[in-house]
Amino acid sequence: MQVVMDEDEVREESEVKNNINAWRQSERKVMIETVQDLIQTSHKYAKSQYTPNAQRVRWTKLAGQLIWYKDQILKNFSLEAMTIQLEALQKRMEESEGERQRQSVSRNYQTIVFRKPEERKAEEARNAETSKASKSDDPEDATGAVSGAVG
Image (cartoon, rainbow, N blue to C red; front, top):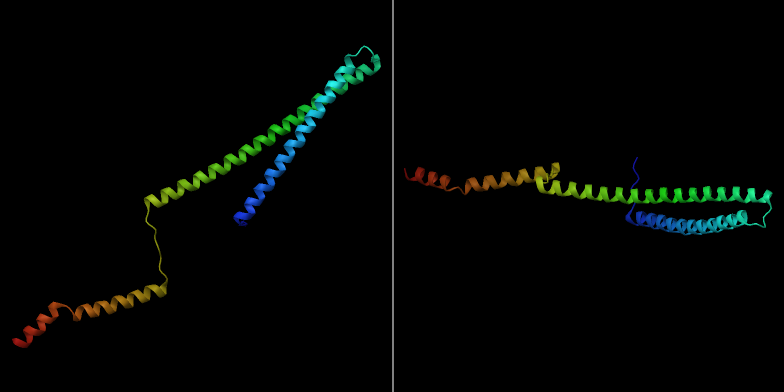
């Protein structure tokens, strides 16, 4: 079963999608900046001469985990960007396919219109009336009547 949506609903849906995507991108940017700051801080503490050896291992492990987390955020961003591009490409392809079909139909074929039975009967009645009128107005009938009267 297909659900038909008005143009307004489609436009509102795309506006909502765009707003959500913009919000996600801004939040993702903040997350990446924050994680990058944490990575730098953990590297600084891991390399510091004032950090005890027992904690140095923890700071190094934290830096590795933060790098992995940042990588996951960037991967998700690239997948979402690819999804957005794919949706735009699909929309352009559908529009171009529709345009191509309209052009081929309008160029190659005439439109066939089937009349309703009532219209067909009315037209047949008009044709019958015009054929009767044309027979009585025919010059051949008039000359035959005149020649029969004379001869």
